[in-house]
Amino acid sequence: MLPYGLLYRLGFAPWERRDVAQSWRPLLDGARAPAPARALDVGCGSGRDAVYLAKRGWRVTGVDSVEKALASARRRAAEEGVEVPWIKGDVAELGRLGLQPGYDLLYDFGCIHGLSDTGRKGAAAGLTQLAAPGAMLLITAFKAGRGIALPRGMDQEDVVALLGDAWELQESRSVVTEDTPAVMRRANPTVYRLIRRTQAAPASTPTAATTEDLRST
Image 1: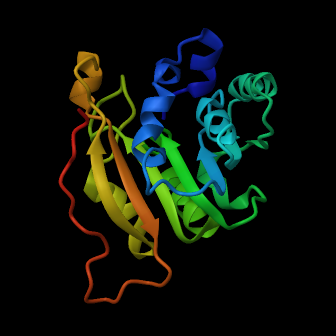
Image 2: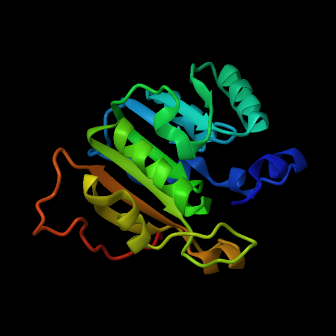
Image 3: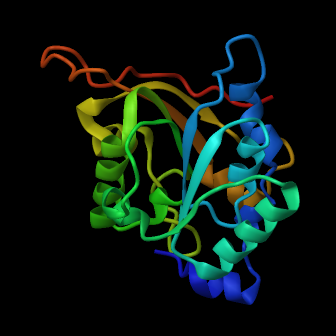
C-alpha cells in the first residue's frame, strides 16, 4: 500500500489534480441524473469530490485515514460554505467506523485498488453493509500488476469477485483521455459502476454482466 500519509506531508499527491467536474459529468448531467441523496466518499483525501457533491445538494460523508488531508478537507468545506462530516478512519475497517447504513451513492476514486487483499475485503464488506438497496457504487482502479511505483490495481474480474453477489456490475469505462500522461495511460484507470442488489442473485444467474470498456472521448 502506498504511504499516503508521508506523500501528503511531502506535498506529493498527484491524484489531487484529477478534474472533479469531468469525473462527475457522466453521472450528474442529463435527464437520468440521480436526485441528490446520501453519499459516502471512501478515501476522500482533501475533500474535492465531497465538497463538489455537497454544493449540489448531496449529503456527503468523507472517510480518510490521513489527518493532513482531512484538515484540508475541513478548510475546503468551510470556504465553500457546505457541511460535510469528515471521519478519520481506515477504509479497510469501513463497517466499524460507526457510520449509519443507507447510503445511496458510494464512491472510491483510487483508494481500494491499492489495499492489501485483507484490506480490500474489509472495505468491500463495509461498502455492502452501508449501502442502501439499489445504491450505486463507483470504483476507480488501475489495471492489475502495475508494480511498486503505482497502486497494485484491480481488473474487472477482481472488482466483481471482491464485491460478490451483493452487487451487479453495470458498466466499466476507461477514463484515459488524449492528454493523460503516458504512465497513467499504461495503467488504464477505469471506473466501474455497480448497483447494490435488493436481494441475492440466484445461483444460476451470473453475478455480474460483462461490459465493454467505454473509452471517454
